Image (cartoon, rainbow over all chains, first blue to last red):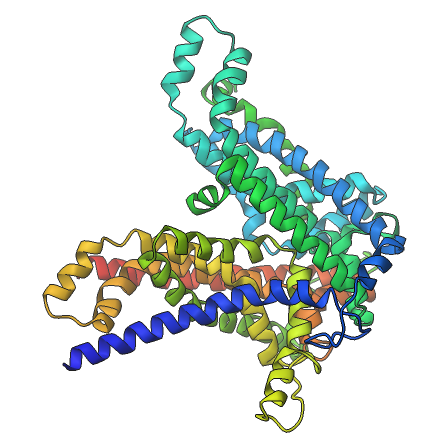
Length: 269
Length: 284
């Protein structure tokens, strides 16, 4: 009897805890979407009236749209650069047991462990020292380094599942290395590449610690701009930007799931 | 040399990335160490002044201690929340599992500025918590939650929770259900089974999540500055102020190295202690 009672307490704690946690995970997303339709000029919740005025104001805010476009450009370029360099590297090191390969793997993964602010600051200091002016290219370089670990892990996992016999078959049947890569290897690791590209894109688009040091007035990026707005005043336009970002993220998540079984890729990581 | 190239021929595809990392990652870190050893921002004389300055400045040390404490509190709280969620995920059917996975992935992929903004709305003077509490007459006046330590801990916990939930779920999935049946058959209640079977077996996942959340929470510049406000100063904003505000390049370089070293020390120490414990469990 006593055991049954303690079992009930356990179940209640687990289910209650899980309920609270799920609510906690969901609430911020819902709050952001709801507040973006407020008709008021404050962040009062629940909103006293409803309107689309902040979305309308957003359309006429070049000081927000400009950084958004810059962020998009940087994220696309950093995704391509880290995707190409990272996939090549993952193909080289993922299945190798050489000591050098393990070392390279550790180095390529280290941006994930190292506090990124130290890296952002160090890159800025080097550019100052060498006399390189900050530009879109220097920003993309910084973002590429931060994105590489995701590509190495996720593409690396796909490469490890690739049966080497398939590649050897193709080569021994007379196919060239390039043809084998294009027709055998690439289709088989496609899911890893797609999933890691999504993660790399989102992490570059959202990057703060590197952009904080490498973005200047001409290359202002969206997260830093939003941070600056929120530090100054509680501008409700940020709610509209957030609403747009939530919808874009949802779309990307659904697209990624549909294209490459994204949640399975994340689970495997 | 030739034999070295031949032995590592298969690594050739990694060469371009290795060069990029050498120039744009390893070299800058070496430069960071070098610049932190200058006495003044004019980079004229060298000396350990910046490190002496940190050690003899009780304010800087307090900021570092606060930052590490914040990381630990956030990691503990998210561990407490992740376990019930993981247990329900494992017990649930396919539909419940995909709902939970969606709830975890959605915030993970949403911009951190957006998630921080949500917490400004939730904790603000006219925010949800105050509205609810006032409406039910539980509080007489709106409470101040934004720009407080506890508000910051709760917000950061929610923001970093996915990093904890994923490894905890992964390790819960690996627990053999037969072990739980065996525990039950031997007369253990569910609470006992949790502490003697589930918890020890999921310790590696919990540890991985703890370290990820700890590192992420200490470095969360945006959330720290916006939810914590100007009066709670933590390492990332101190580094930023010293570098971009005061142009104290050598001091900011030293600060970022000390911060990095402190985080790595905590991660390595906790990792080593936990691994020794786990080995003890294996032997037992």
